[in-house]
Length: 391
Image (cartoon, rainbow, N blue to C red; front, side, top):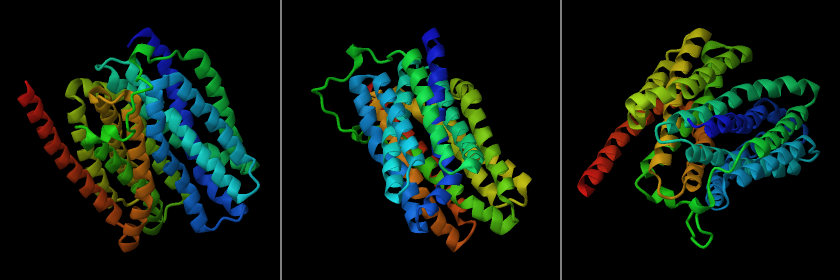
């Protein structure tokens, strides 16, 4: 990678880590904090979904704007607003203020995530794109791992402390990014302000199947994360501490794949083949989960799933980035939207399936992974046929 790339990637790593850290910090604290302000379980569900829903709406918008204005200003807007939103959340004294804060956090964090990925696409070559996307994915994974731990620890001094801490981190990252990062999208490569492009235009292109793939991965992961705690307690009588260790192992394995191995795997096999392997490994992981007998097997089997998941995400991002004709920000912003849609739909569907049978979320996840793999083969054949006929 170029020297400018080596300087920028650690900052982008920090940006993505921060965004997912802030998302993860909420998990152990938000229910207790919201209950103190009078939230019912239904209200809490809406409050939790608000963040992802705003990501769904705003990721393609911010991505499109970054194609016109450049990456750095949009990323800084996201970091600044993200910090303000979390400080406001920590200072809230009324339930409605929590909703306003979560709306702001979801809308503005959407400016940081797709823009960071588009920045990586700008500064990497096609050969190093997968490795760069893998580092960003690893940062997101690690943020989600450490977020709940930090949130739980800081809450000992008050439920507001985790959110104030996330706000301070955002301010620090804003300062570092504003000093270190240089604009990655030259003016001559930006979209003309007069040229109007629908933020959903990329989905109508030949890469639609990759966006569907991203949704499937996010949907199945969210369904697993939202039900495995019940499964572990109901079937194995795990404690919350043991459950935390299991999820940490899964997250670390996924982060290791994305941050360390994915570049080598893509270089050797190509993105398409790595996605295929990832879907197959994920399906195996889902089927193994129904055979969990204790904490150790739970950690091992979820690690198998995490490894598969870690192969798919950066490979899909890199492939979309290489093949898109709609602008990096627009294309990767839409990818963020589909990821958010999966996070919104996965938990309620997973919960409904679990109520019908505790193993159904994992059998259905395996089936979805296999179907996605078959669809991938089908669409790849169509793309190859189209390319051959145009030669």
